[in-house]
Length: 270
Image (cartoon, rainbow, N blue to C red; front, side, top):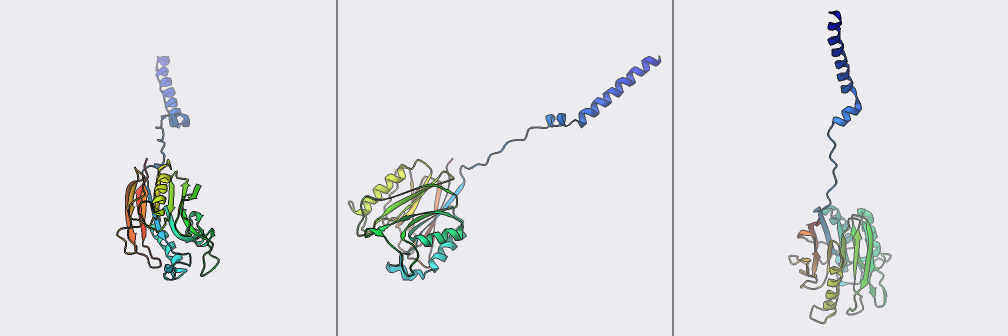
């Protein structure tokens, strides 16, 4: 009788010990927990914004007195910071002014020098501001850049395009076309057609903005067009083209240059 009574007690004791071991075992606890779900950041459809400005900074143009230099540089910095844009395109800029704007905002930049009367044009009043040209600034790192002159231009000022490829896999481009009108055969129209070809062959999500000195679009098939037609100053000749999603344009009146600023907001495609 005693032997029969002890066997159930032993079984009960062993069961309790096994249950305790299972509860305390880290290996069993980890195996029983559900696996954590791996997450990846979604870079598709993210917002993207761009600020376009013509700064009239050479020191030679009639609009330069209105810049009240260096107030136009301060205004540009303030607009970049207020809009918190991903990219900035600048026309009629000076290389050292662009370097200063980039340093004050923390942006990366590339500058394309415009040849004037056969040589780079040094900006003046004051001196020491580098040479005249166009620029692209981006919040993201720049992985590559390209720039080249158009095949024709009017007068003594060469016109060129500039494109950068950012770490985000997006191309940002700018240009400043000739002012001889958009009639067929004009330098402006030839440049427009060449710009269209440049943008058509980028092969990545692309956004362009610049002063094209015309009202009809240079965008290739498949890219949308936005303009500053609602601007107060020189309306309709600053354009933005791209293949980003759901683009909108905002016009911002400027104080120290003869073109209003435009801000483009869109979303990146998947």
